[in-house]
Image (cartoon, rainbow, N blue to C red; front, side, top):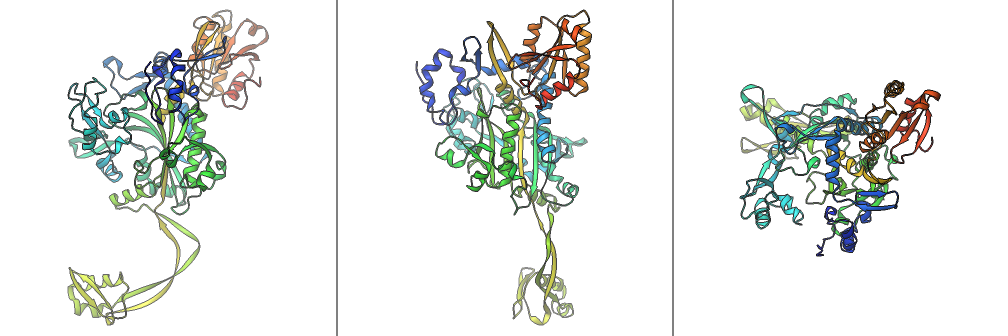
Length: 627
């Protein structure tokens, strides 16, 4: 078998390997995987309970998407007319799972952090995106295949063939680089092609007659920036404060070929935390100071070293992370992602290299999640954006985007005040007297006067034309333009990561069992209630239990279709963590069988109070083992 030599940091496509070939290539790929845990931890698993063995699946992506379509998680949009790449529909279970993940995000940012959520329009007027830089610079490098006429991302073609940093190359350099590479659509060699910039924003007209140009927002952040003064007053003119928003964003991607990873319409959850530029010690940093996060810093990338687990306090003290605010939200993000079902062994935080970090950013990190199909996928970005955004809107709008910060004790400051003698300036300078007076007030003259430029000509002003006094004034505070810390989450990518990391296949009693091991709070259905038979009063008791569970805020489903074993498998496949079986014993002693999805263990519990019991299990206040 011919083996491909992998470069450090590259990941092989495990979809190419079956069980027999895996052992033959292990030595070859171990070198490239030294930045990660052992290869086995990255393989989708088929667990055989009888043999206690783990074997590799061929391609988890196809299995997950098949499950997602069959069970109502994700569907191609407008399928009856021919689906359009970059758009998806969330089915009944997918939509519920998405809401649960959004609400998990809210628990961290709204309940824990105390920030308030706002909602801004998805269409913004052009000035907003001129200020943000999106009109001028929000573009990707595109080319068109001469053979199949497909439009393609030129930098993606180069990166797929091992070229690093292709996104920062110029269009001419990129065109020369890809001319000998095959088209990913038709596999013909591209040859000489033109590479040009393509703006990713969807443009629209606001009102009739196309008098006012607008754009579908490419991110949710700008509404929080333009609302800054309103938010500042809402938070009683005090820093720090934050605003959060979950909503749709739109990017007219050139050739989205990665399913949920690259969409033209997607959901973002963003927080904008406005902080004093000189005070970047987080007031609650002790919460995460000892929290360990796998960091792939600039230095470790340049030296081709693996990520290192480091506490946030240590990372700030060593200068790996710029300040406590950035470190705080790295740790919070790690905790959030793990809580919704992302495998911590497949999660790392990579620092932006100097050539990819925005020029205005003080520091920027990506939370990257490993996917069997797509490799390391950027899922969350955490950046210290300094005062760039507020100053940009200040310049474009002409409004002030600053906060007045009072001193603890008013300060005494001396200043030189120049008072023009208008009675003397008028006869001497006539029509230019006002301009001379304004120049005087804005300057500090010397002992022999000063020379200013009026109408393009130098004008000397002698000391007899003004008076100079030193004044002591009391200054209560100062105006500052806040810096912005921005954690930005891609909800759709988080959903795919959770689906992939939660998917398992097991052999149980000679049959294959597919299961989504979703955390109970994320699962779209939290308990299934199953009458053993569809007669003899069992359905009535089952529906009574469903009603009681729903009154407790538990998402419950009644299921009486098919054999009980088939119903268990159906609920396992969609990630339902608990199942309640109503049988003939229930009529006698008012107890039911409660089944745990992951262990498949069963216990008898009373019907009375079962809704509250399930809620405690879902919220993690009670464990199934504790029953």
